[in-house]
Length: 544
Image 1 (tube, rainbow, N blue to C red):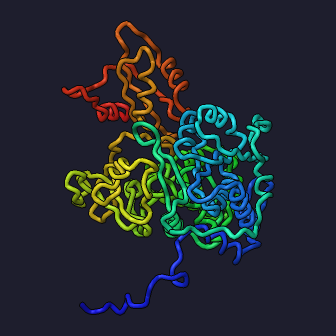
Image 2 (image 1 turned 135 degrees about the vertical axis):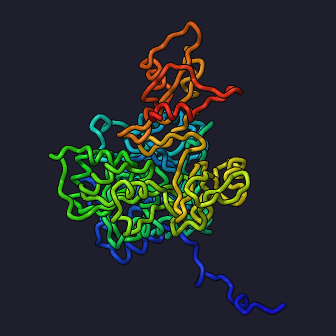
Image 3 (image 1 turned 60 degrees about the vertical axis):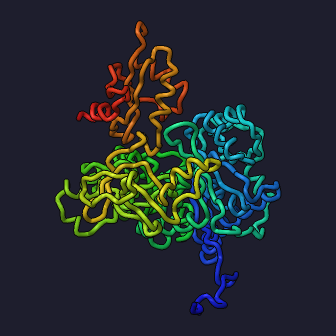
């Protein structure tokens, strides 16, 4: 056998091979653009030198507490500077960052803290009451690090859990701390929980390599140039803000923080800071458009809005364009670091009539450059469906921006990766040009305001009502939220209830955004074997 000259004496070594990690983005930007504005939040103005130093101080402070490789540090934070610092400082300590959805109920937060074995939790005072309730039922007793943001609601200004103050905590760390690179780019960098469709939420593990690649993939998908100004309308607890904390930092951009999505404030910040990009669910778009003219501001240039979720209707797209926005439609899941599919637009499509443009925009699109494989596949045969725009199959992905797997759940991980593909559970068709379009969600997930809601979780809660015999929950189209849960209920013989009573009962058992917006009492359609025909109910609420 001939010797391969390209393998002789050409081994990996520290000079030619380093683990990919987005942590180095901050180091480079702070070195090249130390005085450039990095973060704006109320009266706070920080440059990249300060941003970098505070993140490293956080890393050192965590290390001095014995927190390091393999440990989990959780957060309950809105989109404030401390959340950005955690995206760098926590993994710089070798730990894994777990950004918890602040909209979850105490029981779910408690489960996540226990399941992820959080050794510390960084919490904003607005969320201290729910954390207090969660910790009361937790087996773990993490170090509590309290953030006292000046822009927090006045009603929570006095909240405390008796933990250590964040500013005092990082003051104990050194900015010259020699933080350790990951030993391997496969090392875990973050942990995110997704509700799935049944049982407890699953912990999705990201690695440094995937975070690096998706962050750079965002640059191309969102058409970002150097020094963008990014408005934080997308929660950073969602898939680490789709990796944009690292993307914007890599480009030496300005992070414009926003505690809560409010129309007038978004318009003000976009105008005052010349925002170039923002991301979010369709509800963010609806909030912008619903803002009264008196609260709107003139935009200095066209703003790129990256939207995920239900495709915007033609009228909304036209209204966004008139308001000064360019819309980029993306699709993804928690398991692929956020968006991994983009509706890559062709300039020639701009000349098409409005309805045709809207139909083209409604498609989810093609793979990110950072995703190596995307197809619509028959899950039984594992063969791609024909590109005829009609044959449905399951959306499957493979590549370096697919999760490591589900934490402590090898069975679910193996199932998700069956046949060498990540199975999304979403059903789609593939058009002749290769663009895919979702047609249904095989697991009946409801996406409301960008939040995934399990229909089964809502049903299980309603089944606890003493008068409920049978219940089925489906997605009801909603002009504001995109979708909301709609419950169909059969009552037990001789029992009675009102829709208001059932909704009130649901509020006692579910996070607010999971509570059904409508309850209908009716005979629920079933097959001859007793299976509920949810497609009939979906057609009913959609007027089909």
